[in-house]
Image (cartoon, rainbow over all chains, first blue to last red; front, side, top):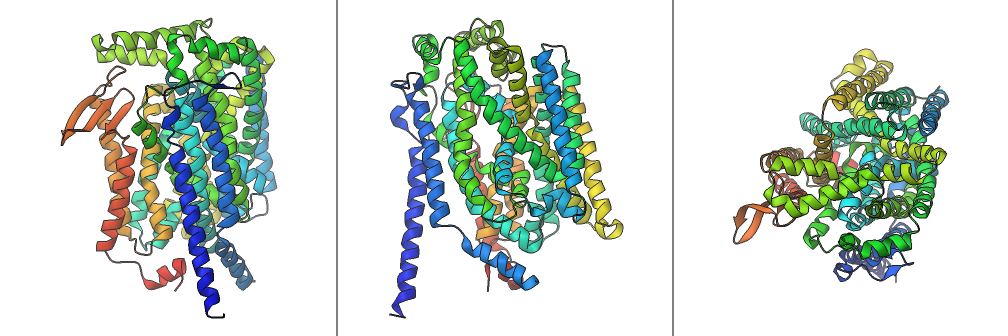
Amino acid sequence: MTHRGPARLDRRNRLKRSLLILAVVAVYALHQDLWFWRTARPLVFGFLPIGLAYHAGFSVLAALLMWLLVSRAWPDHLERADRKDAGDGA
Amino acid sequence: MIPALIVIAYLAVVVYIGVFAFRSARGKEEVEEYFLASRSIGPFVFLMSLFGTNMTAFAILGSSGHAFNNGIVTYGLMASASGLVIPLTIFLIGTRVWALGKRHGFITPVQLFRDRWETSHVGTVVFAVQAVLLVPYIIIGVMGGGTTLSTVSGGLVPYWLGGAIVALVVMTYVFFGGMRGTAFVNTFQTILFLLFGALAVAVIGYGMGGFKASAEALLASPGAYLLTRERISPWYFLSYTFIPLSAIAFPHITMFCLTARRMAQFRKTVVFYPLCIMAIWLPCVFLGVMANRATDIPEIKDKIEARRTLAVEGKTLSAEQRDELRARMDGDDVLLLLLERYAPLWLAGLLGAGIMAAVMATDSQILALSTMFAEDVFTHYGHKERFGAHVQVQTGRAFVVLLTLVAYAIAMNAPESIFSLAIQYAFTGFASLSPLLVAALFWRGSTKWGALASTLWVAAAVTAVAAFQAAVPAPPPGPPVVVAKLFGLDLLARTPGGTAVLGFMPVVPMVLVSGLLMAVVSRLTPKPSPQTLARYFGP
């Protein structure tokens, strides 16, 4: 168990990292929305062309992706290093 | 005159904020306080100011102007792509720059490069390229200030005086307040713009008889294509996602990342950044498109006629005549024209102040350049030891004054179109410099020679694109002028809006070649010492 623990953790971290990279690539791909390229209708809320409304929605999706990255892949080690340095200094 | 008075009152408030920041900074370590606000900016100011720093005159007035002539594609090109790429780079690069700055005391990106790659002169080359790419921003800020003040006052404040007032205000609060003053002012300006932007949409929408009616009328008109992206190449659209890579490579943004008190402050900034972009750009782009229905405004009617003439008769006209029509159809003032026509006087003043807020985002660039001069040249070449920290700060302040005066002199004597173009090159140039940051932070194997090769490539490529566009006149709207072919593909072409390389904007090959040069040259050249690598990547 003690031998398998770190290996399993490492595998989980690698899987998590791969899934997050996949999420970033998928969102980037969704930016290229060829499907609404040549049409203005439907007008969302009666005045917003669908191509513009889609990209407004994309902005919200980007915010959700950032939330996912911040909550799942925050570089804690950088903060820890800073606190350690501050501690050493004191 | 009332709107102009409101704007001038607003400018007085801005100066007060800068001076207030100066007072609150007393007693702190002088150099870090002036250039980095003692690395003590709190979470709210950090988000608002970082965001405000990116909201330049180009972003606000330029976005509605671009949307006026190109339609809703503007949002996808400039806003939603930025909403993904900029926070991603802040998350990946900004946090690491902050941690290294805190640990090693860096103030500018060049200091990081010099230390990371154990080099002096390569850092100086990077400084020179960054400085040349940054200067047009400052000039265009002064021009934007002159135009805005002149427009909101109905011509009572002449362009030269408007530019002088804005230059003086920015110079004053940057001079006294340094980074803290700039951050406070940017925060105030961003809040103002967010509030008044929403108000502007409501008032203009009401004035135009409602957006539903306007959108339907535009759909039924020859301008219906503006509500789709049918005239834009998907390759061009894809290329544009490379442009926001420039944000983190702009020295003022990299430096601003160093001002955060704690790394946790990046969290909210990263998450809320796409939403802030949407809050400002969606109304600007939408209003820019809808301005095509405001033909009761003579200036807008004239722009639409110029665009139509260019599209229909462009092929039969000379390059000069086409340029003249392009200047006439330029839409950078449509937002101001809509306000003038549909908003009551007092509100036009408040909204003008909001637009002025965006125009004055040039303060960050002025501070960044003076910081770079003080740190990367003055201190690096030994003058700090000779004269002390106080003289270093005074040198930075003197540089702020000098830079503002030079920018004002150039702004009053040169056509705006030149600098608008230069800003486009600056975005491309800084995006192509982004591999330097990535390599310095993530790749042990990168070397100073790789960095030098990338930087020289960027300088050469930006110059080549500028020379190419000056030599080959822009064609009328329609197919591009193909200059070179390779295996049946359009290798190099002059498009109505710029240059295309294999159908992509120049930024794509420039970023890719920059990254490739960094990789290849670094592999062939000696690495920094193990001690240096251990400080950055651990043993």
